[in-house]
Image (cartoon, rainbow, N blue to C red; front, side):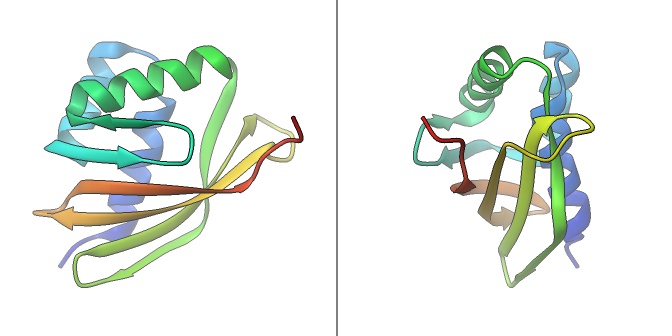
Length: 120
């Protein structure tokens, strides 16, 4: 049986990790090698592609942290979870929901949706 909490927490931890070598370990544990990530603003493939996305978000939104919003749910090979993003200790600035496909306990693909974004 797949532990949805473990997968979602691993995902959030990977996005928050600033050390590249530690992040590489988290990506290996959380995502398949051929992972595909898509959201309205960016896309990446494989561990290197996802690592580049994480780097870009961390550079653009320095000091922001991801956190899980509620509990993940899913069925069969699907997972759905929501997240918050913003500086620690204040209400989230950005919120989203991600839908993933799980293969052998790791994420094979992720499609992200932005539920709340700041006015431009």
